[in-house]
Image: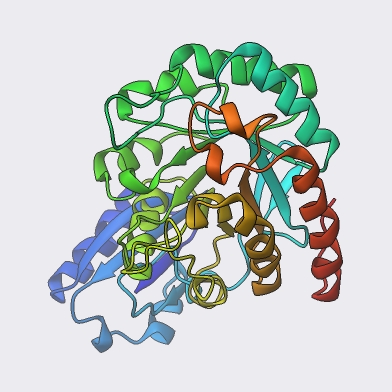
Length: 337
């Protein structure tokens, strides 16, 4: 159960409420969430009458949430969360297009791609700076220099940027990155999630390749519970027995997540399929399924890309996705700007 407290309640009054619940064998934890003072109640809360709680002068309302993820749940917050990144709204009526290379390879490369994808319809530029690769001999990214080049492209072309953070120690390096991405391998890195929950910056949380929907939402709960309400979920394919594609893109998760949570949901068709020829049809299918946006790998010359060239599309194909996607979005009452 989640109890929303009166905004003018004092610490003494909060402590008295917590003690009162404890006397009834109910554990109560206070959190300050998105300018709201909340008590999270644990234990035999079915014995509590939420209507009676609402009559308390220090309590605004009480909401019963049966799922293990409380703040993420649609039961707690019925209206959709809209994450604002500059002038871009993620989770609203518009379908957001995020595009760019798997890796930032040089200052000139990211500058050129940034200009091309923005002109073709991208709202946000993506680019990997620290690359977690399965082999230590593969290109690992430019690191801090990559972040620097990405930020320079952002300022020159006036477009927000998103990049994946590898560890807690790198948080300061990402101070000028608009959206910090938590990759699939870090989805359950709880210490990293706790640290990111304390910063005033949107977090793009990718589903782990072998994780369930509940595990994804519980990871998001870490971010919200720590005080960061600006969380964006991303489906990027899961590992199954099928080897024809890099992963299996689970588009059924999109409408299901929309039912379970108020957080916006993106789809990454590039990592999901691992095949550039499949990116366009799966992008269009993702829009039709209700995704709030796409995260697509675009390269000016995929054949010489230092990472994931096989799943990267050229700019003209990205432009086609934007144009075709806009028609599908309009059919379901949305738009791509």
